[in-house]
Image 1 (cartoon, rainbow, N blue to C red):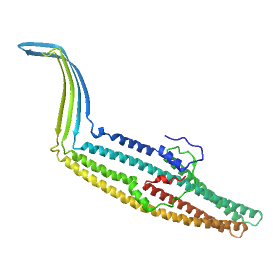
Image 2: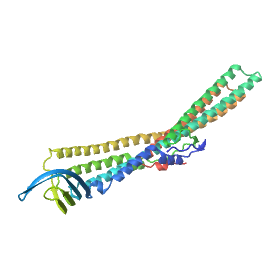
Image 3: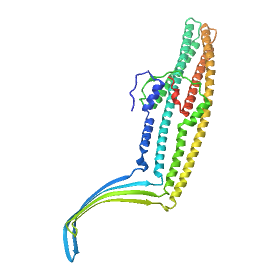
Image 4: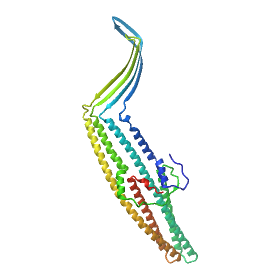
Length: 425
């Protein structure tokens, strides 16, 4: 379903974006359907607990020529019409199959759990992508404002140079250079606005809504400085969706091995049936026959030899179980390494934010002083431009440091299964 475009420049909060994404995203919808299929498959009937009941019915007509002799007398018929009707109700119930039905039911339960965990993983990945996409728009929006501020400073510089030329104390060359710098700043704004439009389209795609839907976001990028490494790491080892899927896969592999081993045990089947047969013929010794009957039976069978196929399947199942264990251990090690890298990035980014905030304060003060001195004519346009660039670079670095810290924070919380705490709108 594609949502109708909202009014231009409506404010979209992070909570709203996440809610829309979870409701509308196509990937989540597909995962929900797969989870529903897995839930439907987990039944006692699918595991083989219930009896199987079949109803059958047959009716046939025939025309035959016949010759027969009975009691010393012979008789022949031509074109004798015959009919045959039959109906039956048959039931079979496997009451013992080496406990395979129990293992099958358990395995179906584990598969359902895997589907639920995969749905959770899909939702976590979507929420993480929405958060990063949302704050990427915030980052670019802030960058547009920074560049626009630079345009304002450049415009003031042009105004000052024009005033100097008007009173005869300025230089045409300085005025032309000021106008060139102003155009360069305006060009940078236009390029950043194009990046902003592309970022909005990407977020709209995650939300499964029209690409032309316009909106604004909150430009501030909040950072949680209280993430504790040991607490997050323990939570990740207990709650991470990918790790839970891998561990559940071990259980599934073990249950599959037990199912195959169950084939070595005898299978006991109870059977019962009710039949009705009726035949009529215009020729022959017996012209009419009708029978009804109830039957009950028990069958026991055991596989004595199947070309060692059961042994082969048992060996392969053991290997699959071993591989599942290896994959779980591998995923645990991979997640541990990823976590340590992300936490290091997180702490370094917070330190950078503190440093860049101090640098920005100095650069902002320097620019204010330079602009005032330029108005008074005590510094050159080149010195003003350098102060302007320093301020622009400092503010851009601060925005990037905040965004990198938010990215690391988002991934750390995703790995630990605690993304719900990041929506701070």
